[in-house]
Every structure is written in C-alpha cells, then in structure tokens.
Image 1 (cartoon, rainbow, N blue to C red):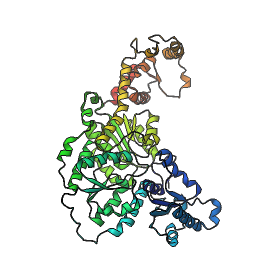
Image 2: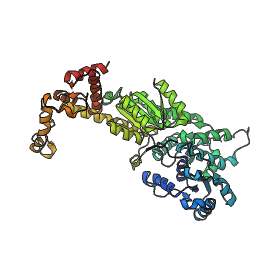
Image 3: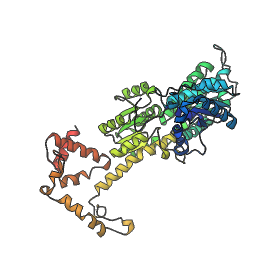
Image 4: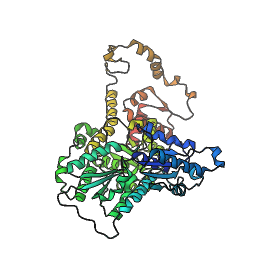
Length: 534
C-alpha cells in the first residue's frame, strides 16, 4: 500500500458508494469505523447533491473492538431495512473494517431479510475506486438480472416488425465527470435516430429496473471503467450486442452513430449528414491556425484520455507529447494509443511522477484531472480538466457535456480558450512599448489615460534596480554559479508570450550554466533559442 498526499482514486468501497448513490431503492450497509464516513462529502459537497448517499455505517469505535462488532453490523442491517425499506441491499466493509474480518456477507444472510442482499468482496489493499464501482455494478446486474437469463444456447427472439429498437445506457454514476450532461446529450442523439432507451443504469435506476436489462435489444457502454464488465456478462447471458464506441469528439460520435445504427438495424447516413456541431468549422477557421502544432500532455482515466488523444491529433491539429492514465486495468489500450502517437505511455497513480513528466516535457497545454490542474498551475502552464477526479467547479449548473456533437463544442471552448488567452498576452507583449499600452500606462477606461503618476512613483525603485549597471548587482546574494540576467535581456524576455516564458527562462539559464556564462545578455538569449530550436 502506498501512502500519498493526493490520490487519483479512493478505496473500492467508495466506488460501491458511487453506484448506490446513483441508484434508487438500493441501500448500502458498510462495516466501517467512525472516520470512514468522510466519503459523504464527495456527494454532498463536491457533486452538490441535495440528499445524502443511501449508506448506513456501523461506525464502530476503538472501545468496540474488544466486544462484538459482528452484532453491531447485524443491528445496522436490521435498522436500515426497517427505516428505509429498500428493494435490495448491498453489504460490505471499508478498508479499515476489512481488517476485523467479521464476514458481512454471512452476517447479513443469517438475518434472513425479505429482500435481495448482495455481498461485496472488495479487496481494499489491492484494488481501487473504479474497480470497486465496476465490481459492484456487475454483482448487482448478475444477482438481479441473472434469474431472468435464458437457457444457454437458446436463440434470442427477433424484434417485432415496426417496433423501434431498445437499448440500455450503462455506466453513468454518481461523482462521474459530466455524466449527468453526457446522458442528456446521448439521449438526444438516440431520440433523433428513433432508438428507445429501456433502462439507464446505474444512474436513477432501481433494482427492479436492473432485473429487466435483458429485455433490451442491445447495450451502450458509455463508461467502460464502470460498465464494461457488466455489459460483457449481459452479452454472454442474454446474447445482447454492445456498442463500445464512446462518443467523445466529432469522429468518435460519428463512429458511435454507425455502431448504434448497426445494432438497431437502421441506416446511419441521414444522421451522419446532420452533424450539427461547430468544432470542425472552428478548428479550420483562421483564428485556430494559431493552435496547430501546440504541444499537449494528456493524463486521466483511460476513457477520457484516449478520447482526448484522438481529438487532439485528428480534430484540432495538436501535437500530443505525453499520454498516460491511472486506470491500470486499461493500461494496454493506453499503450496502444501511445505507440500510434510515437510515445511511451505513462501508467501510474503517483501524481509526483506525473508532475515530473510534465516539468520535463514543458507542454503548452495540459489536459488532465484536478490533480494536473494543480500541477499545471504551479508550473504556469494552461490546463483544462477532462477527467475525474474533479472538484466542485467541474459540476457546473449549466449544461456542459463531453459527449456528442454538443460535447465536442464544449470541449473546443474548454481546451482552446486557455491557449487563445496566450495569444492575447503575446499581442500585448508586441505593443508593450506603445505610448498607449506600455506597462506604466494606467487603465484608459478608468480615466487614467496615458498618465499614472501614482503607478510611476510606485515602480520607480523597481525600474532603477532593473536599469542598474551589472557591476552594482549584489552578486554575493545569488546562489554560487547561478547566471545573472542583464537588464536588456530581461526586457527581451518579456516579449516572449507568458505561457512559454518560463520555459524560455529555464532553458536559457541551463544553457548559460553549461557554458559557465555568468551574465545572460540578449545574445545569450538568442543563442539559447537557436540551440534548443535545433
């Protein structure tokens, strides 16, 4: 077990909570100590849900360890059933509760409660959150839909003539990155295609809904990390085809439409001809040619990282210089994509490794989770969030999907605007010495015009220090061997756009140190530029 300050995923029981919280009529009894109730905050504060998760904790304390903790668990199960009257119940232990080895499954079965009780065996010290969510959903589907499965080898009855095709949408869960809005975007596509949605699960589904999953004609797997295992079981048990194209980006959305049409037995051509999104036109427009070839680093869950790499390469003309994931279960898919891009994939759940790689590559844009947002902020690199784990600002009140043509437009805005702001800064740098726009000029809209006596007085000491001869610099106060920037070189450095200025400074200083150059001049700056530009 690796202890760390930040973590991309929680323990597997948090994944189980995500499934229980997404559903209705399901209750989770968790054998856990008092401190493990912190997970409630994910839903009430981060996702901003208006109700608590349907979870009952045993909340045993240190003094209980000398007594009968098994009795505490059984009491919690009985009380939860009497209070909430759920359709089904899942039981398990948190990472701390697992150490007591009280066997929640056997204890719950001994109660003989009049409802399905599904035990969860979630190895807290070998697996993590997404695996826990996938395993929980799989166990629920298998326990509730399994009794309705046809005999092995039986032929699935064909759909009646004139009936619309029906599908299940699998994967949307609580605390998922834009799952709520993705669901709406995909539902609109299916409605236009004339495909009916039978069940959405686990989002807002009940145990009774899961029991009918086999009645649909096919399944759509929106998030493989959560629904891939359950969909494979449904395919084997009910002979249901599955759509695996994840519609993130224009190209992937078109692939998704083709796969859905194949499963539904309809012609995809009319729906491909619509293509209402704006991303293709915007990415070809004059304003966007500035973005071609921008160096991008991508890291996140496998589904969103793979989608981002394809969008960057095929739809925006970016240059992907780094690709990785913390989803070890999907490491092969990431490695295959990285190989196609001529890269070595970064498979890790250690954010310090990710930070070191970003610092080494010095990309012009980072696409990642909230962890990469913090890293990029420290390194002064533009960043856009594309994947969980996320924070409260990534659950916006507005409609902001990632899937479908609507999602492609949201992605364009979210990824491109940080880079466009860099272009704006570059233009400001070009006009820095203009009489109207120089650094000493006040804000014209505040009535300062081109005169700002207070600001000039405040900057006089700084200006004097920058303009001082090199001989007057307190060299003794600098670290031994560190090069000193001449005033003219500092002025020239300011002409470089802010989003690559830090990289230019570091490269120039490294160039000077290697050649024992004590004072960095304008000539040194351009020599370094020529050296690193080869």
